[in-house]
Image (spheres, rainbow, N blue to C red):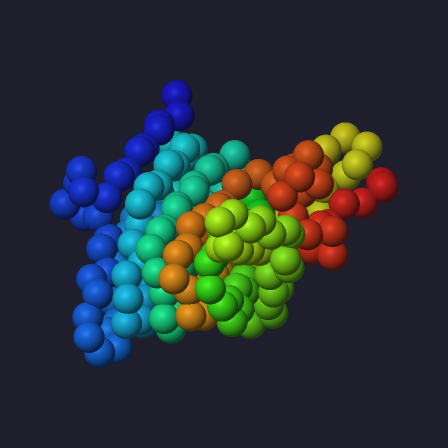
Length: 211
């Protein structure tokens, strides 16, 4: 039976909070499952929620087939902020008599911002990066909100919706930077099947194959 965790800042002592300061500051949080977050900023950006559904038979320190983890950060940012996930590596991660890889897990991040976004990137363990694409914008009462998204996903078959080669095991980094007065930033690790890619990923970062 799978377990469901709901983590809300302010409800648990391990919540991540980055406090506003008059000068530049740096804060880092280390979490179970190879998940980390750090911020270098003069304002506030904090974890507002996390929902995770993890395979109880798989290694607790990395993510693998059918796992799900979503973290949402909110606040303002003047500088940069990073989050990370560790995906399982079949040459390293041995647990319950099984060598584990990342399976069909992919990574997606999107942000709604008011202000100037400098960059939103998703980087693999070997340093290869994908950059966010503008997905849309809305204006209300003179304030424009921009929506950006970035994906790094394994190939999925359009015929049977089955994943091909897994993403590389190791630590993956998501980085957000800019002069942002308001942000809602989501970082997701999950099964990025055909429907998910077509709905949430920029077309240039989808990996859908016909075979």
